[in-house]
Every structure is written in C-alpha cells, then in structure tokens.
Image (cartoon, rainbow, N blue to C red; front, top):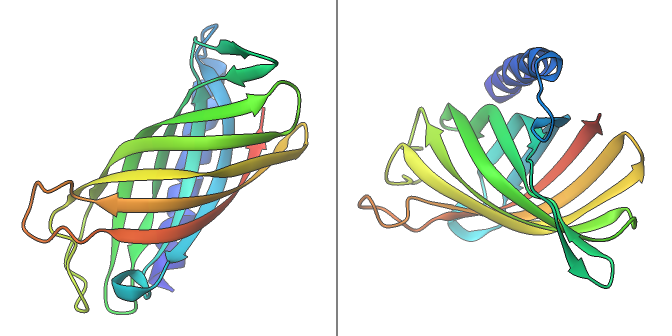
Length: 181
C-alpha cells in the first residue's frame, strides 16, 4: 500500500510539473510525454523488488537521420516514485537520457537509456543495494499505437557502479504507459 501511495504522489507531482513546463517550453526543448512506469524484479536477488513511478519526458533540440529512414531523437526523462520490497520501501528520483531509435514514421522504437538515480533507502532486509546513489540503464521497445499513447517494455539494470560496498545490482522488467503531447 505504501508503494502505491508514494507512486501516486510522485505521478501527481510529475503531471503538475509537466503542465507548468509545457507552458514555458522553448523551441527544441519541450514536454514530450507524461506517464506511469511499473517494474518488478527479474529473479534471483532482484525477485521481490518493485518500482512504481511517474515519468515526464522532454524532447531535446537534437535529432539525427541515420539513413534509410532511421531517426535518433534523444529526450530527457525525469521520474519520481517508490522502490522497494515487502520489508522496506523508499522514494527515488531519477534524471536520464533516453535514445529512441526508430525507422522513420513507423510507431515502434528501440530504446536505450541511462541515468543517475537517488534512493531514500538502500537497505531492504533481504539485501542492500550499497548506496543511495545508483545508476539505472535500460533497453527495450516502445510502441505508439495512437498519436497520443506510447506503451513500452524495458529491461532495466540498477547498480551503484562500484562506488559503494554492495554492488550486485538489480535487474527488473518495466512496463510503462505515457500520454504524448
């Protein structure tokens, strides 16, 4: 229950932030989408972990055409949510770069991303994650079945990058839905 309450508060803050950011956006940097993301542990030491977060994505002023209709359009993603297991839950915030590679106007993209993440809790009874500072990296697919909707699946790895003692990392499957502007 605590996980859902923190995530609901986080997503409400993201939507409010996104509304303000959209009004003040400048050309080339503007609100691209807001959404929710849910993830669960992949197995092993990650098996009992979950995350739920609100996400805001901003387009960046760069876009590259790579030939044969392929485009790379990076964006900045900010997120706020809850992370934990049945024993402990913490709040986290993250800012990361997403690099979607898409074949022109086809509504499917290959996503790769990385970003620093800050946790309010790093000890979770069943295991620790080493430090409050983590690095999340992910890859997966996104699909836009409608002009305003994007569905995504990502395989995510979170680790402290060897900056602290315990560095086994967590692997998660994440699913998201976003409203695109």
